[in-house]
Structures are given as structure tokens and as C-alpha cells.
Length: 155
Image (tube, rainbow, N blue to C red):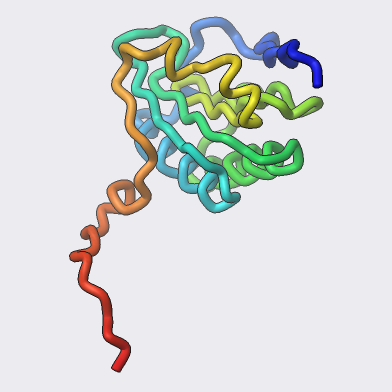
């Protein structure tokens, strides 16, 4: 196995510094839709980084891991479908040819889907370590009450 990293996705189709796509204040709803879509396609280690105060690149990164290139593509496709449901279209989709690291850029929110080894090489969480970060918690995102921890006896 080679030790060289696969090429990082270029973002040549997107305009530099462009945030949003005309949908005012849809960032939190879009983050939720994208992270939930990744979870629905069995992504692991889903993390949301709030970057609005630290970067002009985007307000949020949603980062997750896939086990195969097929899963990378499936996560990106499903996230795009779910984003469309909340009225958002991507500015750019990059890295899907090799699918070691793919991203879907919505301007204010960027989805990064990595194969595990590639995620370790680029380590975006370390790069943006000063930005607030949270692990994806679908219970919190859907405003459901957490479980009380009591189990049903099934009697």
C-alpha cells in the first residue's frame, strides 16, 4: 500500500469566498439535513464544526467517514437529495471521481466525506481545532427528549 495521500478535491468550480446560495438563515437546517443524510447512509464519526467566527470559507463543516468509495458517493448523493428538500442546491461537488475525499459545497455549509485513512491524513478537525465542534447527535438535532435509560421489561 502506498503512503502517498490521494489528491485533495479541488474547488475550481466554486467562487472563492462565496457563502450561502440565496437561502437566508438556512444554515442550521441544512447542517441537520446533511448530517442526518450521512447517518442514514451509515457514515461514521460525524462531526459538525462551526467555523463562522474562524473562517471565510464556510460557516459549518460536516465531516464524516465512509468505509468504501461506493459509500462515499452514496453519502454525497443522499445529502444532496436531502439538501434539495430544504431548498438548497450545491455550488460544487468535488472528489467523486476517486472518492477518497469528496466534498459537497453549499457556500455556508460544506460536507466532507472521507475514507478512514484519508481522513487521518488530512485531519481537518486538528486543522480547525479552535473552532467549536460537536459530534453529531440526532436526538439533539431533532429536539427529541433523551431516553431516561429505563428499559422496557417486555412482559
